[in-house]
Amino acid sequence: MSIPYRKRKKKVIGPDHQLHEAWMMEQFSYPPIKFEDFVKECTESQGVSGAQVKGIASAMSNRLKFYLAMGHSVQIEGIGTLKPVFSAATADAPEKLSSENVRQVKVQFYPHKDFQKMLQKMEFVDMDALNEEGEES
Image (tube, rainbow, N blue to C red; front, side, top):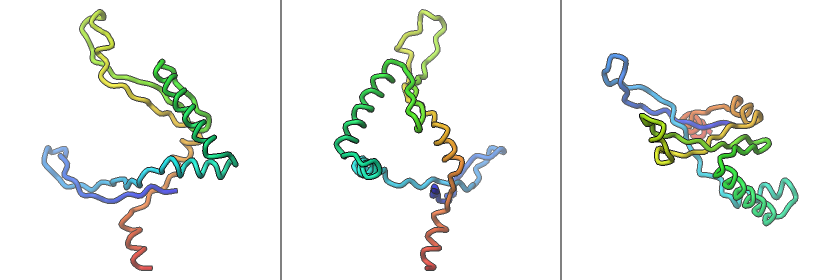
């Protein structure tokens, strides 16, 4: 498993407050896996119907939204924990704090230890080098 990247030149402000050129790694993103393809792979590996997988996925999605909306974290074995979090504006007195101070609500993901191990083993490959190898063959 490897994550492809490209090298890109960028202008940055250096410690001397001057504009300099620097190189950065830019992640190459593949298109997302379609849900239908994902379901097909799950059905083939587990011997269940696509309708069953879709039904279970739909039920899990509904329950996940329900619990997150109530402020609960949800642990999904082998995947990780999803937790609702928010950021809010400050106030100069406690009575001035209310739900109107909330700026943004997100879901934070804490990967399961197996996911963390997989991430630590990820490799990275230069897309330009891959393209050059492909041209030589």
